[in-house]
Length: 318
Ligand code: AMP
Image (cartoon, rainbow, N blue to C red):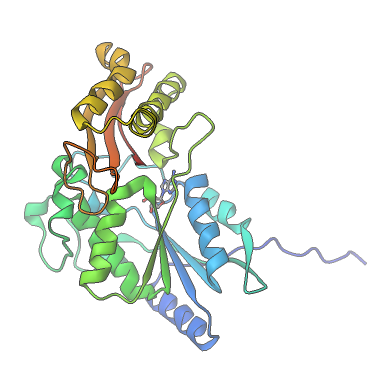
């Protein structure tokens, strides 16, 4: 008789809010804590590091994959954003860890469609939008918010929806999007969500390049050039920590020198390189060594093969 082969593990894939709520109730009844990892998919090791942290911390883990229209401006890459759902599911299927002595795996992949998340519709043009949104005033207008004025309103809105649907014990975000993590913390505080926010370290490849789903847009030479973004941030941190340089203007000048050759030949364009208070994101002119700070940057890189332009963000804490 042929031996029965055990089926490879596959998480439950849910597309409706009602089903996620039923699953959440089953976790409550089983006395399990629930970790939520919200993502836009095209998963890479950076996402997986957040998921692994959730598997360690919680009895149950749910990840969401949803490319959220309200955080894209009409001229941005909503349509082009990489969508690799089947690969994503097979990647997360292979993850396991232990929590409280028991094996944990990703229990649920939540894959809602736009209608499920925005039952009243969601035009990309902000002037056409109506209804309920979540804004975190102050933090959202700085840095990223200057170039992407409605971005954090979109993020805060969709993350609130996930929080309301899942009511997780903990939710996991990456320091890669440092400002986003502050916006979410502030939202949780002000809207009284009873959720612990866990912010995980930036996952970089061996070259130092921070992993990002948008790295898929880069051709080979541009990937290589983009490794200079981390070199620049690290140079700033070294100057501050090893040579005690605390003048922001001086640090910015010396960091800029690292990428100047690429700026000069038109392959890189700086949106901002900023040094800010870690909590308020207030722009600093002088770093207080008792408090440190955060160097954040957004750089446009242009592919050598097809002139495609990608905006990369990165940061380093001081
Ligand atoms: P995204 O799919 O880009 O919206 O990212 C989902 C979550 O993964 C966010 O909380 C990101 O900050 C986090 N993330 C993305 N890239 C990385 C990375 N390289 N290291 C750690 N976390 C990351």
